[in-house]
Image (cartoon, rainbow, N blue to C red; front, side):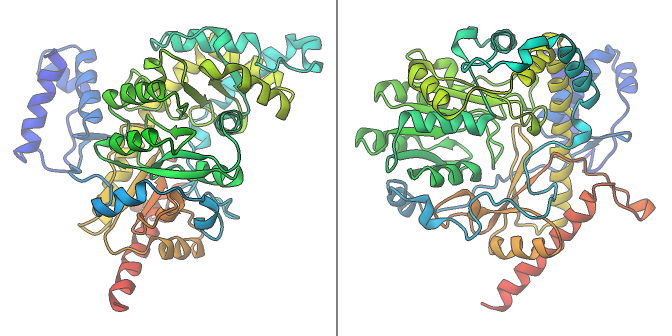
Length: 487
């Protein structure tokens, strides 16, 4: 055990013994370093470790505080027998979509609804400087069609960037796309045809359900719990030849925030190869884990090229860039052909700018900073919801990402979503994340905006997040009371 882990254990024991009650402000880092005769670096690592383990949370400009301990994860308790039967059912997502679709484009914008980071977390000034530099030296390059596979400079930059994370890709492995959803769409179109069935997780990101619906693909939902994917279900449908491909997120997934255990990622790569059935890995949150070192994707264990790895800069940097990538593996030729048929490449200037941003080290620096800030956001939102929601509320404990998944037994989440919209608050009910009625008492919120508590000044932060979340919690109680009254 390292020195900082040993020091952290003292804090954990005091918290468990309630010598440090929930909400207690902890000593400043310099005080810890002096008191325990350790370096400031060790003290910092101690608090970072305690944050990652969920024992404490940071509040900007205020310090570190003891966190409420979340013992439950927000996965609904389902009837295992019914789930087994339904888990083998091929379903047309069009038939079961909510009236406004799985991932509705809301007329109002509320930071709680869309999974994205706030503008203040985006390195706008650094990006603008980068764009100016690249534009000045672009010359005729601006007026040419871009390479269909993608700018070689960006592909080289990505290969070097991921090599730092122990992912060995060459520039020739990548295809640059218009964001991650475009990368996934190209994979679906190049690997399957209309009417084919694709295995997905349950719950599944609502945007993927809308995409599969628009592409006229059927789905089989594979249950996911706090233990991970039900791999027995997946192998059963692979053995029966019920699917043409699978589509899973594996790290910091939306909407639960969980990351599959390494053993499951290895198993996914093995099953794809064993049954020669491609797996599309949507890894858009890959770099937003709570740990400093990103978790490895299933693609890492793919030795036969059956895993198609997709990602983008939309969640880490700025959604408006619309830049993503894919490593299609053994399906490179049909994938690139489909890309050529549906577009003439991706904006060349923005590719060059992103290559520059990566090569200068500014992208890695930004990701390291935003990852820590988002971890703090998650903890603050969790603490708020624990204090404001009923005691039986189950709140997810994400290992990364931007969102929280909340389950409250007896809640009509669809009605909550409607009531919230009347208050100009946008959330996503559990109905958006499945073709089944499994998640009627669940909802998802985005944590990409800072939750500033300004009650002392009788004001709210400039985005109104604190006020919106307070109103949402009141609406939850109102919806629950109405459900009880009508029973």
